[in-house]
Image (cartoon, rainbow, N blue to C red; front, side):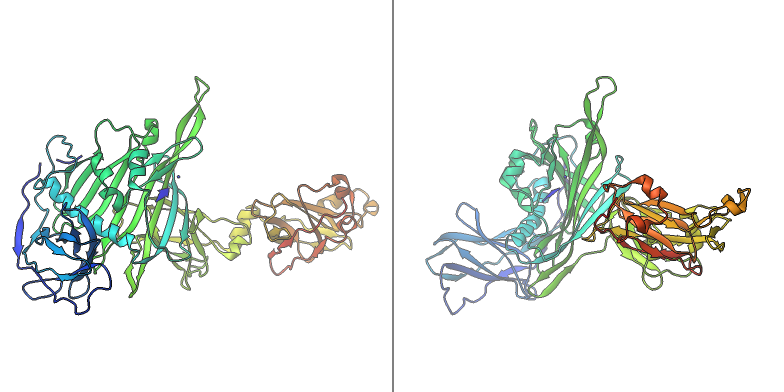
Amino acid sequence: MRANGIRVGLPVAWIVLPIAWVVLQAAVAPAIQGQVVRGSLVDAADDAGITGAMISLMDRGDRPVEQVLTRGATGLFELRAPEPGEYRVRAERIGYATTFSAFFSISTGDTLTVPISAPVEALSLEGIQAAVGPRCQVRPEEGLAVARVWDEASKALAAANWTQERGLYRYEMLGIKRLLDERGRRVEFEDRAYAQSLVPVPYVARSADSLVYGGFARLSAEGSEFWAPDAGVLLSDSFLDTHCLRIRSAGSELVGLEFEPVPNRDVADIAGTLWLDAATAVLQRVDFRYVNLPVPQWLMDASPGGTVRFRALPNGTWIVTSWHIRMFNAGAEEHPLTGRLVPTLEGVAMTHGEVLRVHGDEGVVFEGERGRRVVGTVLDSLGAGLPGALVYVEGSGTETVTDASGRFELDHLGIGTYELQFTHPYLQQLWYEPERAEVEVGPTTTSLVEIGFQAPSMSAVLADVCGRDGPPATPLITADRRTAWRTGVLTGRVTDENGAPVKDATLHLLTKAHEARLFAEVRDPSTFDFEGQRVRWEEETSPSGFYRVCWLPADLPVELVVLGKDEDVDRGALRASPSLADLYPDRVRILTMDPASPHRTLDLRMESPGPG
């Protein structure tokens, strides 16, 4: 997956439970090929099968050559030896001591049941404390507190790695890219992408050797890449040989196993903590941070690092349920004294992955949680719920639409200050943006955060977009000396022949009328040219192709033509022509604003340029 220290432990408490290995009878039919070892793990007290234990076939060098998880109500397992020889079976279950069978021999094509019986000792990590003073333990010896914690963490990692390698599941994923300000507090924008099809793995790192020896981050002027560890990396020989392990305590509920690079490593690396439940020894998550990066300290102030969360399923398999990477977003500015460009921290970039659902042969086996959420209501100007309003965060994908009662909910939010916005079709047509609302989502936010929006009335919107003074108090005078009050607002969108928005196009509008004040200034009304008077408007389109023209006369024909910014336009002819249709006969639209409706929407299509 890619994006842009521990201390002296007290003895562990041990409890002996009446659990034993019981042998299954050999299958009648021999294996078609290979050497097969079968068995079942059951509770000696009631013969109930134990599922989710990792069973390993160990060779004479005590190297695992085959692994499988016990499954089903009877705790069945089946292993295949790669070749005839001597082996023994190792059983590992999180929260219990490891058990071995005696060595046995298996010949070519044999199918064996292995008679082993041993108590399984339940253990707890409660009471383990952090060490006093720094200690670097690489591959700690059996019996040390740090070794006990690592044994439990490695069981979960091995199960997660085994589950992923065998492709047992298909995942529905949500990917999020989030940009925060330089303090890492305010969410500037957020982009989301839902997997269009089920993916075989939720999260995978580069190979362990590539990361350990090549670095967990690659930085360059063209761009930077950061990687996080997966279960296979944390279990690898290369990682364990180059990282120290220490115990870290976090109160009575969690025990941490810290890891950091051995002294004198100068490769871009990671340090962090594997957090386990103290009572059950179950792995919860891995927190990590990037170290040894060749960057100034002010970039490291962004606290680059991340988290990987793990989860055990009821059948004993393990999956990654979420992960995120936090990176600095670097920029450059000119040093005031030297004039040279120096790196600066422009913001914090985050890449996040969330497992929404996990599908197995039996259907959905896991449903992800919805995470931190914000809920609220959008009310109309009369105080009733406004359905069909879009509530969103700047970016793409973090959005929802209000229901029939105006309610909305946004989920899977990160830690930070969000600036929520809302809009509605009647507001979008007017190219109007209501006031935004800030909401703080904290690290301890577990319940819903409630906010509310109040949508403005149409009159308030028109006053905002066209000026608080409202429409002009004096009317236009038409050629036949009628009055036409300027109360209309025209909005719309200009697109090209392919439907793409056209920015910086100019709308030219013209009507046969004149300002009343002009006639009032004429000394001899008989000399005033009523027929020759025209009123003109010009408005440009936005980057999204939207336009808005305020205070058009009602019940009076208006000519309209759209001209592209690159067209060869005779401005003098435009200003002097009594009719736009004389210059652009095939491109002019005639519209009349309805005096009973103050607003009209008209979407326009840019056509081939006419004569200029």
